[in-house]
Image 1 (cartoon, helix red, strand yellow):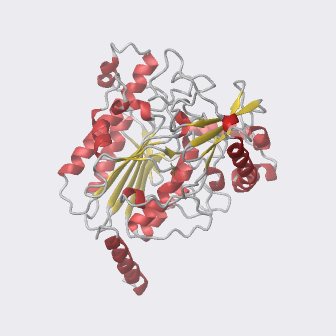
Image 2 (tube, helix red, strand yellow; image 1 turned 45 degrees about the vertical axis):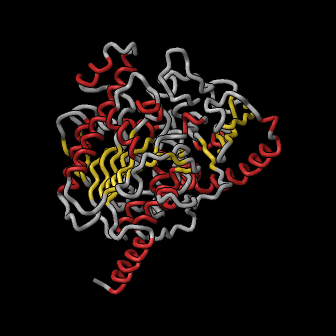
Image 3 (cartoon, helix red, strand yellow; image 1 turned 120 degrees about the horizontal axis):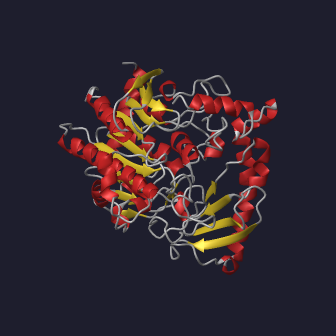
Amino acid sequence: MTIKKIVLVVFTMILNQGVGWSEKPNIIFVLTDDMSWGEIGRTGNEIIQTPHLDRLYDQSLRFRNFHVSSYCAPTRAQLMSGRHEFFAGVTDTRYERDNLRDDIKILPQYFKDAGYRTAMIGKWHLASVEKGLTGNPLAPYRRGFDMALYVRNQVNRFNPYLNRNGINEKFEGYCGDILFDEAIKWIESGDEEQPHFLYLATSIPHGPVAAPEKYLAIYEDSGLTEKQAGYYAMVSNVDTNMGRLMKWLEKRDNKRKTILIFMTDNGHAISGYQGAGHNFRGFLEKDGLYNAGLRGAKNQQWQGGTCVPFFLYWPGVADKGLDNYTLGSGMDILPTFCDIIGVKPDDPDLQGHSLLNDILDKPSGVPQDRVLINHAGRWNYPTEMESFKYNASIITNRFRLVWERENKSNKDAKRSLALYNYRTDLGEESNIVNQHLELVEKLQAMYEPWWKAAKKGMVNDLHQMKKGKLIGPSSSQNKRYKKASKKN
């Protein structure tokens, strides 16, 4: 061992002992796709069956004011980079604008610095090409994960092919079961003396809706539509596998403690917010799915689109079933994990804050006056970004300012400002913008320089515009991209 490594090990031991643990914990981070607070029985859903997530809910530290992007790849960019997704180059889920910029250090690389084994299993969705704009590889197994068993976006529901470190493998069975099977196998295959970090990203309950018959049978007489029942069946499969993982961890004879995290990537959806029963104003229609009282869903700028479950269970540290209301963000995952494992992020443009003090029930390290800016992106071509400028919201630890559109189209939409106190008005029904004009003016003024800076980080959009090769719904590049995607 080199002197540099010895110093790092000693420093880490001192740091960890100072906050209450002497060994680096294992970390298992489970991220599900297109589900949220309403899909957990413990929040009041009387139809859905999630006994294992309910148990995890009861045991965990629950971050109740934790926000991510309102959709998919951008949230994943936050988790991996510690930056707002636009500053990490990701502005969409398509059109080569979901490529996580290749000139930054990302989460698993910090775990490698700390001596961890690392694995990623499931949905990556941060690389639609092999190399980034500076020529570095984008595949997860080339960016810090020792083993990556993954697809770019959606795992086929039954008998899928998965790419293991560059080689396709065929699997038999249902995707949810397979991913958790492989996760347990990977952990068992390693040296117990070495800590591990596992990032398990399911592609369910995102559509297409399909589940094994035994899960569909649970909802046969529920009164749900066929799609809704299928969606809930996928959630119940996730729940069963979470229970299986939890039981396995409890029986495992390992002196090193394991932090188990459950999180979702955005608000609920069945092929968009409409499928879950929301209208374009975010309100739940008569036959819509339970959403725990929240307004909005995936791709929408209200609480139901961005405020997601984040449960952290750490035996002996965070295992009392408590709620935390710190204004948290997906950007906080990287600095929080780095704090836990004793490494210092070296990205000068890091935008997240460590939540370790919140986990340890100490005064939060997140500023009380923190402001989060959420933007739904999703312009068809990079040249259209200005016409989507206000497809956004601004979140403080009590208020949300939304530029609400007056029709279904986001492009050049006519918008009006709305301000909600989401702490007292969970469903965001009472627009109090006229009662807080000074605050509204302050938040608007903050947005303009933020947007200007964010555009500089949109490296994939800027690259397409510079080269004059715009990728969008009608481009030849997109047709080739769709054809290639069907192979996953």
